[in-house]
Structure formats: C-alpha cells, structure tokens
Length: 305
Image 1 (cartoon, rainbow, N blue to C red):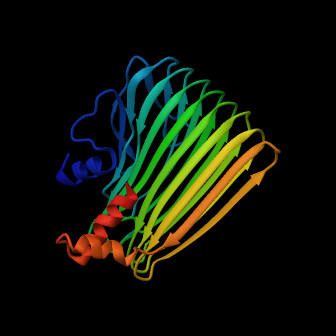
Image 2 (spheres, rainbow, N blue to C red; image 1 turned 45 degrees about the horizontal axis):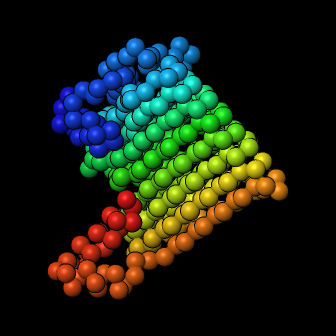
C-alpha cells in the first residue's frame, strides 16, 4: 500500500499493519484483503455488493475489521454488509470509511450495515469517517445502520466524523426486545461549507428494553448540522437522548427531538443544548500561556471526547 492508503486506514480503523483476527478491506469498490477465523466467517454477497459476517455463538475476545477506503475521484461506492452475531457472543467490530479526493469530481460512499444480535450477544461497534485531499470534488459519506437486538443483547456504538467530510446523512434505526440495551455515542465536527444530518429512530419494543444516545457536535465557519431523533417506548422501558452542540463563526445547528410513549410504563427523556464556547473558559486557558486559537482547540477536543 502507498502512504495515502496507509494513512486512511490509520485514521478510520487505527490499522498500522495487517490486523489480527477476521478482516475485510475494501478499496475503490472492490475487496482487496480478507481473513476469516474459526469462529468468524466472511462471505461475499451474490446479489449485490457487500459481505455477510457470521459470528458463531459463544465467540469471545475476537474482533472484525471492515474498513473502506476510496482514493479514486468521481467514484460512487455502495456496499451492503450484514452481521449475524450468535447467542452469547462478545466481539468488537471496527468499520469506517476514509476518502482521499484530489480531483474535481465528487467521491461518495454509502455503507448500509445491518446487525442481527441473538439472545445475550454483545457487540462494541466503532465507526469512523474521514476525508482529505486538495481537490474541489466533494467527499460524501452516507452511512445507514440497522440494529435488531433480541432478548438480553447489548450493542454499543461509537460513531465519529473526524474531519474533511463535505456532506453526510447518517441514519440509525433500531428495534430492541426484552432486557436488551443500545448505547450510542456520536461525535461530529463540521467546518467551511460542510453539511451533516443525523437521524436516530429507536423502537423500545420489549420489557425493560433501554437506550442511551449521546451526541456531541461542533459546527464552525458556515457549516450546518441537523440532529433528528425519535425514541418510541412501546412497553416498560427506558430511553435517554442527550444532544449537546457548540456553534462557532456562522455555524448553524438544528436539533429536533421527539419522544413517543405508547405505554404507561415508558420512561423517556430527551435533553438538547446548543451554545457557544464561554469566554471565561478561553480566558482561563490563555492565562496558562495558550493563544486564543489553541484554547478553543483544547476546549473543542475535550468536548468531543
């Protein structure tokens, strides 16, 4: 691999060399490297672009890396990946996409990921998005995540947009059964003329189903972000959505929360806050020798952690 390819993999999947365990690396619309294990199989779909990842029940302490990189201008890449996680499995899945575009044509990746967790299965899912390149062509990323949790399953999702993405629509839809839990932490920063839209829809269908969604967003320059969330409680359940945002320059952020209780025992909470960096925070850091810009960067870095 050349330096551009290596840097993209490092940014989105923290891959410095060939990862341990199961992996599938996709570049410019084609799978280029793959490895399977005794407990984790990866099969190419026959009817559309993408793969099926099958994880045996009781699989523990294993990981799957499925990063996508695009280095070709003018490419639109669509991939459909389905994950089947067996009973009592406990695994880490690392995805994400990096685009390097130095052309005047747009490069785009749409990743549709579906997760089917059997009873008491547990997944930590890490997804990072990153763009770079000096070209005028846009870097567009549109991830869609569909999550189905059976009784007692646990899905922890960390979704991060690092930088350099000109346009993104990020959609997550989840159906949660008895005693199952979904936790999502999202961190997004936009600048210049960039646009980001996040859509969450969580259906708490089972008894004692729960979800906790945390979104941290920073919009700088003339960028714009939209955050739409809908949590539906159909039984005795708990749902908490927390959206905190910082605007800088001429940045704009719209937060549209919606909670729907269809059961008297549904306990649903939504919190949203949008503001700017407090002047006294900057002043305090400047007294320690930081410039105003360095102080802002440190505050933002801590906010997005």
